[in-house]
Amino acid sequence: MRTLYHHPIHAPSRVARVMLAEKGLPFEPVIERPWERRADFLRMNPSGEVPVLVEEDGTVIAGGLAVVEYLEEAYPDTPLLPREVAARAEVRRIADWFLHKFEREVAENLVGEKLTKRLSGQGHPFAPAIRAGLANITYHLDYIAFLSERRPWLAGPVFSLADIAAAAQLSCLDYIDNVPWDRSPETKDWYARIKSRPSFRALLSDNITGCPPPKHYSDLDF
Image 1 (cartoon, rainbow, N blue to C red):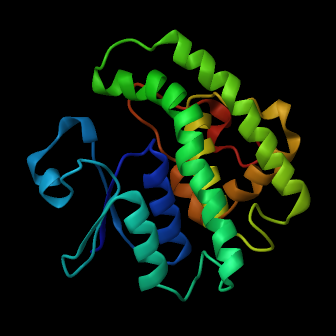
Image 2: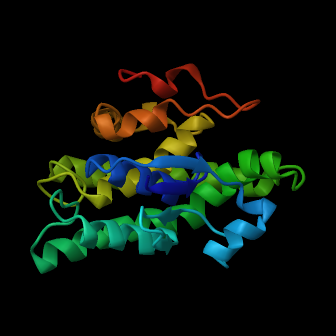
């Protein structure tokens, strides 16, 4: 069977999981801890990063961007990018915002400090980084609210990779209870629609031993 090497609380891995589910592609999820630097995993992806997708014929697609582009090109029957060139560019712009800008300004400072350091034994959280992440997240929530007030979905009229990327990041933050949902009702309403999609259900069942999520994490109605 198709195999996805991933880490549960890692946004690009979550994007891959949701894309596979949206496209109706069965796969076996295998949890990989990138900090362990396993030799077998490094042979598949020398960068040591997840996600890595291995097709049934042994084809290896390594890295978040490569997996996204591969799934969209290899399995186009359920598109997650629109056909129009300008519309595709807008989806990519928003996806890039959350997979890179949000990652730098928020996720690395919160998920990285509070969860990844704990799991990997890399020391104690750095308080200034956590404060920065908590300050920065409000700006991104406001941006999601701005978009969702003007469009049915973040990049336009249909659900797309842009929504998946943003929701993947927020779901990681929500796992550690660091999303101030009351600040942005519009963002909360948009995320509730994402949580209700069947493709998102597996993410809501994630539970890392010793680091459980808050009670509302899997509640479709918060």
